[in-house]
Length: 166
Length: 438
Image (cartoon, rainbow over all chains, first blue to last red; front, top):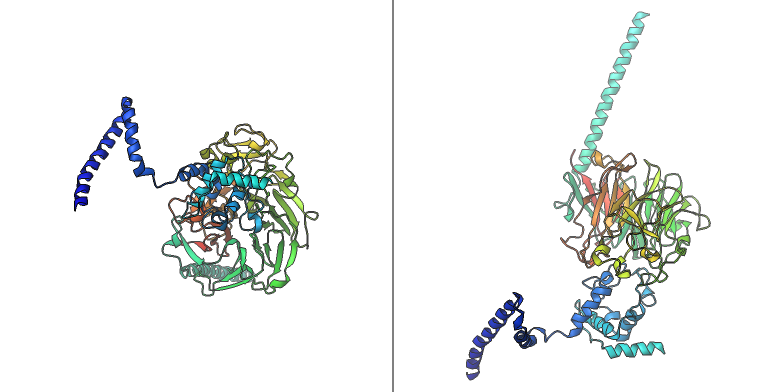
């Protein structure tokens, strides 16, 4: 009982805060820059509500994906029948982390060419990308397009690189 | 004497009149037969989802065919289809319509290899794998009765991962013209690789990236027995012999990835719209310029490829031929057919139908070109802009990835009555477009 009453008290208060945020925001966007310091505080308050559930590799990985992967593998990760392989629910994306890292870093000519009639286009290696970018994009494709698999960390990318150098 | 001449004259007049009546009657009858034939056709009430111009209708001849690539219709109206991959060991299908409604009733198959090319004439069926071209004898009914005794006409053509399919056509004088696609996007040292320079001269052109000519009556020919008929063609999937011009006409798939390979020179939007897909009339020993140039249909110029020092503006390829028609970038012309039938209205006669497979290299822009286009021809040249003839194959208003498209036009063939057949290697459907008005 007490809890419910408390909640009832909080809700109007919460709405008030939201309204204030909204008003302050619109104030800010209409050009009154002098309130920027207060505004920063308010954005920090609202941050946990909007961003907590999404790990950073999704947004960071998506940036890399759009830059280097999307043309061939397409916005939906479906690839192009006969030309570029899909990234959806496949072993080489969801299985062993090193399988995926090898394709990203060294390209696909060697590995996916097993059935040459299946996917005609070669993929270059993207070893010139940094460990962080590779970890983000690998984690992004392992957790997009309906995929779900453990993300890959930058230190795992670094470990893989030094392993293949040996 | 005079009486006799008069009699003869009368007789001739009567005879001529009789002939005239007979002619008129038979013409009448022929017309009636054609009309009756069309009345029996099971035209789909919604044209099978395909948009065609007024007066045309669409019949769904068959579906669930796997991935039919090129198609050929023989003189009795039965249809041969080449499958990209054999199904249950059958890479060529033979469809027949027994009751005249246009819908296939029986299906037979043979040939245990996949491929794209197929062609039929009065005596033989020709079909290609990615390395070879075979010939099968037809019986009086236009059927292959001995599928295991095919003649190998051409063998040992190069086939790697990229552009491996061997489209071909014949000229009616015993010659075969086969596309050997370049196994590369733009002849970079490392294919499709950022920063990799173009090979100079491009060694691929020795055995690919052009059209090779062989005899249709000699066996086991390869490069030594054939002739490089034209070069500098990246990949030709659609080609046809134009009997009016007595020349080969081809459609080329233009290069990909200007933005992903040269992000400093081309933004994503420019890359989605360049270069043009092109149509060429081919004369012996022509060079269309690949990989050194591509065709920019906005500037109407042959532009030096960035792999060879180009910047999107520098022109090159002074000795390379110009296209006779251009189309939007990346939409993949997969079949070309010059229409010689009597069924369609006059403006279609001798014009070119082109089956476009639809794009992938426009991403992140939306994909385009899942359609059959038409280019009107007069005196052996295009006489107007290309137009959409049949559309709606994708089954979606907007396509962002080709894997979403329901149907992708791949092959074209003309039936003995002048119908236009369209194959779809994505949904596995065969369509037949007919003109329904008199």
